[in-house]
Image (cartoon, rainbow, N blue to C red; front, side):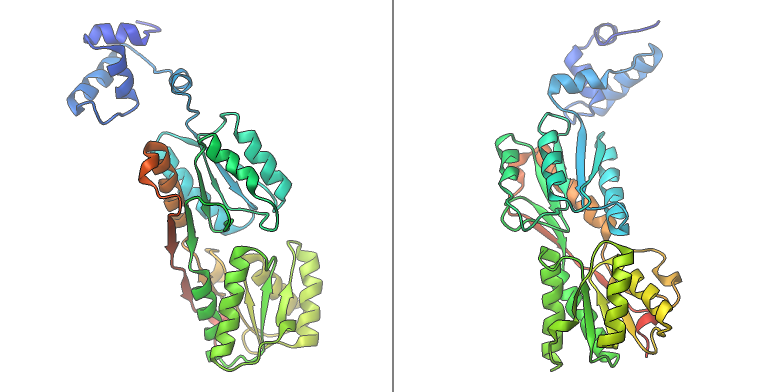
Length: 336
């Protein structure tokens, strides 16, 4: 029997079309026995449910939008993997948008998503210095939003973050205990929320161990490897730090490259530690000491929060904040 429709399938089972439809959506109000009977008959009759038509009737796209600042960072790749895993289990697809840290791109993506292309958004933000009122349109149009990692403090919505302050304090403390007294802190945008928290952890660790805070050792870097190479060679030759703490993954690599060119030995002459979820960190030469965020788990938690908002909006507090602990993993780049 070819091209069986849902009405014919329901008639063969002596059930209503709505019951059959709910079985294919895996609704919990249908008994396991009934669902199995429906699926067995559907297989026998070669019935294929039209999920697209069903989604249109429900006014749902069954798609989640994920907005990230960049794709090259291993942290975001792992977080997206966690989000996709949850979405797949829920019968959803994901659309990925990379802003390249461009605020106007972020605004454009959000406004594009208002057309029903996605049922919800999971986002790591890019433009904290800008006006974020455009996001309030999401609330008016009932499009759920969850922040992860990088957030806007002035927008009330659930978020999943890591303990950036504590992690930075521990990382700086580790360098101090390894004998460092001139620790450079490398940052790409110190105005971002994570940049502020991470820098404060660094500063407070210096204060605790009575090491003078030197503003010259807060180094503004960029997303460009060639530019960072110039910046870091100047820092290493003129300021002569004995320790480097990188607030993002790419700056640890840039430090290694600069040290190689300048023939500076790590860890004998310079100790290096950085935030990184890179799985090959143990394979670098020397192996890199890292503050490792549980990136995949962050993605999973953000997705679970969003689906709770989709399934039962009243069950999620708009101010809900999930804070996950990072891990300090000591390797050869900070050994004495």
